[in-house]
Structures are given as C-alpha cells and as structure tokens.
Image 1 (cartoon, rainbow, N blue to C red):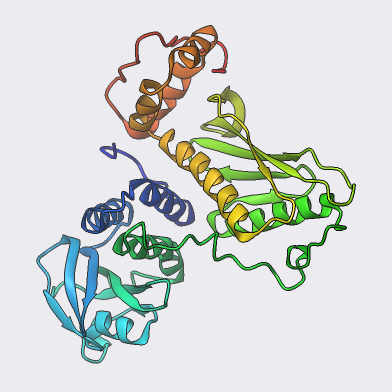
Image 2: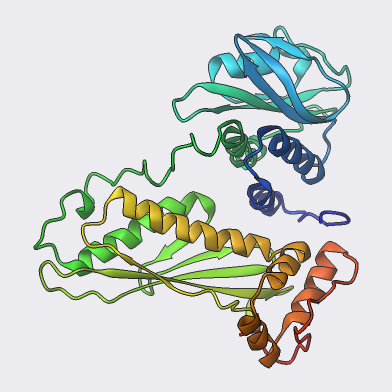
Length: 358
C-alpha cells in the first residue's frame, strides 16, 4: 500500500497526510497499532535513526514497537529524555541530547530527540512516542505539533475500544451556546444552527471547516475532497422537531487542485437526525455518522481501499457504476501518486473515463 509512495515535500502537508494515514491504520489492537504507527512515521519523517514507543509499566517505561536499532528495554521514571517527558507530562524537544542532563544514550549516533507523552482519558501518562535523529537540532515546533495527532492515536491504541469513552459524548457546549438552555419555545432554526456550529467546532482540529452560508463542512485530502452537507426540514413553530440531514459527496482531485472534473459520488445516502432538544447522545450519533464518512474518504485515497470498496458493492450500485464512470481516470491518478501494480477491477465495473461515477 505504501511501497514507492512519495510524501509531500511541504512539511505541513506531510504531517497532515501522516495523521490521516495513521488514523486509517488503527484497528484497536495496541501492539499492532503502535507497530504500524512507528513504521508509518519511519516512512514519512526524514532524517530519523529511531522512532517508536515506550509504554508505562508501573514506575518505569518499557520498550514497545519501534523502527531503528535495538534500544534500551527499560527507562526509569524521570530518567533521560523519555522518562522526563513521562514524569512531567510534557513534550521534550531537545536540540542536543548530549547537553540534556541525565541523557540515556541507547544509540550513540543520536544527536537530537523529540518525545511526546500520551495520556488516558483521566490524564494518566500511558507511554511516550520517541523520535531520534543523528542531526543536531533536527526537530522543531512544527514537528512537535505535527506528531501530536499520532501520539493521541497511540493513546487510543492502549485503551480497549469498549473502555474508550466517545469524545463526542463528552463534548462540552460553550457557555453562551443556546444548546445549554433549549426550551419548547426555542426557535428550531436556532437549534439547527447551533448544532451545525458545534459540529464545525468539533472537527476544526481535524481540518474541517464549517461555512455558515451554505451549511457545509469541507475536508481536504491529497487526492479527494469530501463535502459534508447539512440541511434540515425545520420550521420556526414552537416545539416542532428539527431534522438534520448529513449528506456526503466525494470528489477526486487532479494534480492542479480540488476540481470537480473527476467527480466520484459513491452513492453515500443521507442520514437524518432529529436535533430538537439535541443532547450529548444525539450529538455523538451525528459525529459517529460523519466519522464513518471520513473513514470512507480515507479508504478511497488508496488503491487497496478503493478495490475493497468496489468489491463490497451490491448488484444495483454496480449497475449504476456501469452506466457512467470516471473510475479509470481516478485509478490513473492513484497510479501516479503511489506507483502501484495495475489494479484488478471487479467484474461488472465500467472502466471508461468519459463521465463521472454516479
């Protein structure tokens, strides 16, 4: 899936893509997830000689999955760069490890280091993500911020899915939000607008933006654009229920930017939610629905994921794909980006590139 893939030269785009691909790899298996995360970092971040994890076991850090030379198996709490990051609960950005008091030289070639602790929902340190480089001053603030989402994913890997609370369920409305004081006389248009605002605020760190004018969230990837539309059947009659409809459309992007010439609407059906007196439970349901759509978008950014999606289609969607399709054009773009072997198109899928897939 990643063989021959060229990561963006721009560092901010590189880290954005790293976060997206890292999230797509998560399977809820702690050791496997950390192994894949460390391997992905090793591929994405240049000039490293070690990248991996230490997990907390009692009052020490124990070596986890990593890439690079063999490393110290145990690190005392508060010892070295990793132990200090764990004990203080703060990232450590070290330009010269030899100048760091108590530095533990697992690899004598390491000259600079970046360590990010990650936490349980209760704030307990679960472990650290550790990156070493043979180049002095290799890491900066952009590296730290770019790797924070990966460290958060590591925290999720440590927790069984059944025990991990939903962030959406724990979401707090702002103090001035109308959602804190909804009554039977609250205009439903205001409720709808407030829910849309909260969806936008929730996804803002992930790069989605809510546009008030057209009630639309936009999410950008290297190859696709996902537009999440929000409409409602609301009225302003007191006590009337409000339906929020989530509609996702996926567009392929060409090399020049986000154009609609490679339109790929994959028949994602809208989902309606009643948001009158919207509570945290209903908000969590909406977020879960959007997360599923974003997961599909991430899946479609790789040939492997696209093939899996096509293979899972039923007969009727397959007939719709036969009617018109821009599949080959999109696959060609994936070929250029990821240097893959020719894809095996499932039987019954039209590979013409004249029209869009509908």
